[in-house]
Image 1: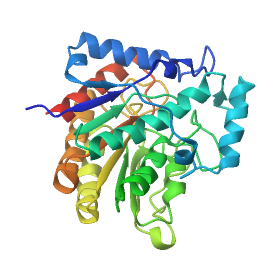
Image 2 (image 1 turned 60 degrees about the vertical axis):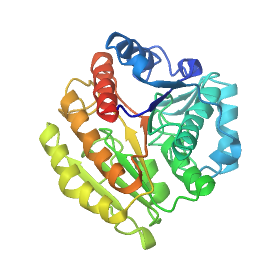
Image 3 (image 1 turned 180 degrees about the vertical axis):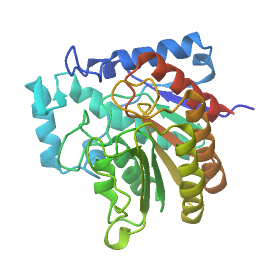
Image 4 (image 1 turned 90 degrees about the horizontal axis):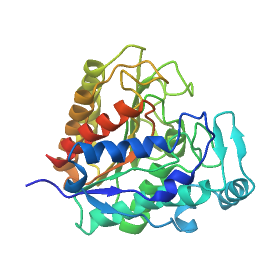
Length: 313
């Protein structure tokens, strides 16, 4: 029997406006939704509209002064926060719902209403530091979800798997001294944002709980699958997470214009199966997958389809 997979989406995500030529555009979510309908997958998902995250939930990761600064930047927008990151009047509601989608998905998993979830959100999150927006990201959606799961549901250990082509520097920085969160990332290196070397393994009590697998341009399915099988799986099974969060960027796809890796739809499906095996073994299959990058619209739709079909198996 197929798993109950939640699909979290809200029209407000389309109101985050980074500019007409910006690659992180509303067309990304429209492409995903249109493709899933054409592929006959839309009706197999459980559709939920996320509510806005409470400010107290955001404060589990981000200082209140930073949250207020983002709100003001959105209200007076468009505001350029860094060379790549824009806050527009529609960004505030979108960013609150993006973080809210993750915490709401966790609630649904913990009450067993869902077995896994995919959050089709904008703006993305994994480059956002606790007190700084960057790389298209305002709030770190996955980091907020991890802290929410620990605080609201008293989960002890969270695994974050990041297969975006860009290293999730924000997520790493937030948890690098924390042994309760295992952060695993495959990414093109050297590449934006310049972090994610093999030597970055965490600090203090968190040493050994950051695993970076930097990959050279041209690496594809074989290299990522080797990393997931040989490095992620044994460490994760030893760690025994209570919940798995995926920073699901699809810009490592071979057709993506912003990077140089060569992952295929079949590769994303197999990566999903490896993570699902870990979740099935350790935490009753609880996975919340959160959209990060992915900028070739056709490849993005097909990759999300492959990911969701693997989750449904």
